[in-house]
Image (tube, rainbow, N blue to C red; front, side, top):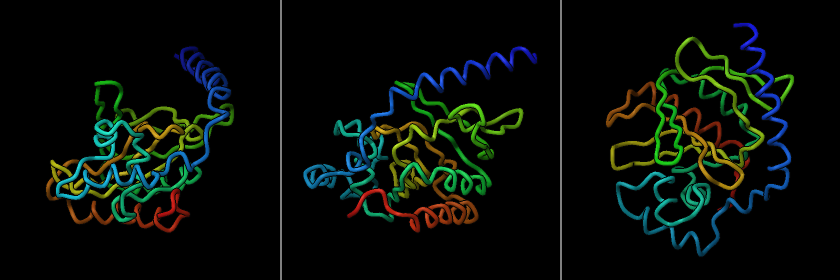
Length: 208
């Protein structure tokens, strides 16, 4: 078992190193912000009630998810740069319950449980989650993110409150949401509100 863990650690270090050159030339944040033309294209989808999740609107319009989110009012989508990852992740740990969603191709992975703490690796670019025996765990790459958005929308299935993490091309990597419920508990809503307020106090990723 000990050898297996060492082997896994070595693989992660190598993978981290190999990824670095690929993303070294990523564009600046302005490429993740909607232009006037894109805002006009996005606005009709959010003129009614309920409204689609940004990742659904992105698929419909053929635009990056980050561009969709950037076109929404700040109360609905509060965006910050990936440099704020550590503070945002720490805030998520204060939620009593969470649903982490990972979309990969046509697959949707759901992990129920609290967000675990984590820390940067001393040997690679990974942010290692300190997971318990069950629930969310793994190794994240905050340095490859381009944007983080707190999303507060009324979706087709009810209130949609969560934080979505997007890559440097503006595509979704994963999101952490309040568990699906038409009437989430006031305590959970307050915990989300604190995270969104924290992000609203940070420098905005895109200017209105």
